Length: 109
Length: 117
Image 1 (cartoon, rainbow over the protein chains, first blue to last red):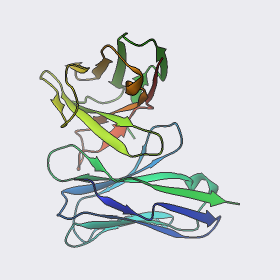
Image 2 (cartoon, rainbow over the protein chains, first blue to last red; image 1 turned 60 degrees about the horizontal axis):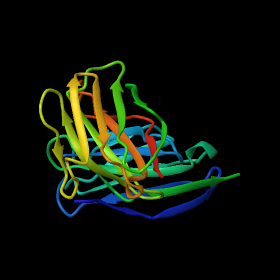
Image 3 (cartoon, each protein chain N blue to C red; image 1 turned 90 degrees about the vertical axis):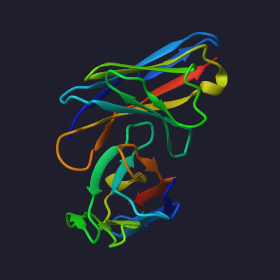
């Protein structure tokens, strides 16, 4: 089951904020967030395990709702280096991840 | 974070030949590794789960005889694309599960771009 990500693409000016959402039709064991730049490996950002959890730091943080069916990634005061494609990976059971289609983020000067 | 090395980064081969891609966890032991395929501007599609010392588990629609996976040690998994054809051209990425800590975080290799002529 592939989680649904939104929006598909975002263009920001440096310093603006963005929110990327990831939702599932059934409860997840965990959700993993990655950022991938063109032609490179996805880089792990963070993992959320508990319903109601929020984690991260002031610039990049994420939340996981109580039902564990929705997660949001918050990018605050965006920097040029934030550009890339963001994927959420959903774990339903076991170790495998099902990735969303990705959200393409472009931060412009 | 943990480091996963993938080799080669780019391979061009003739149709009908076989190509082997290696995935190594450099600073941790990975009992489980994963192989993904990614088409341009698309998501990562899980092909198979590779377990050390046992047979790989393939996702529906992935031909196990076409994509041979071997996970002979705790730090190395290989994917062999047998008798490659142009439709096999893609970006192949491996990941390794770090068993330490919570959540079974996967760390990714840099990927292998396969072009079959």
